[in-house]
Image (cartoon, rainbow, N blue to C red):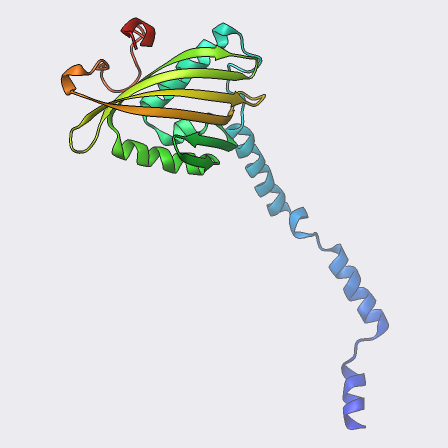
Length: 205
């Protein structure tokens, strides 16, 4: 009987329960609170900036495809993984030799490792063919390893772009040829290839 009286004394009335429920309903859900809305806007703006279109955009003409190829060459010659990764869609899929990657972060990490191994890297790309949203490229790059052995890598790439000009798929097949340092053909100061430097066809590659 004593326990029963204590339970009745601490049990809220129906009116009290109704008022408590109304107060809870009046509180904004987490996603509706002002600070949450501000954070969502910031994230949205950041995402929009990252995913801004990257001209030239599909459908490609021969001229715009050639420009896209040169822009890719310039980016890779910068050897800046963060800059390069932004040219690919967030869910980009790669096959590079026998390595399969998905997403920008995997691309960044791959490129960091690549240029830790491949020193004195210099690259030339050249368009092979194109459609409205795809570009085929051949490329050659020269590099040395940490034992000062020099190599010339010959490769072919297939690119597929989304509507924002971001590369969604990249398939690259590459073969390495060991060369002597005296056989090098790419000797411009590291960075962007000068406009007057010969391309692959002019070099007979």
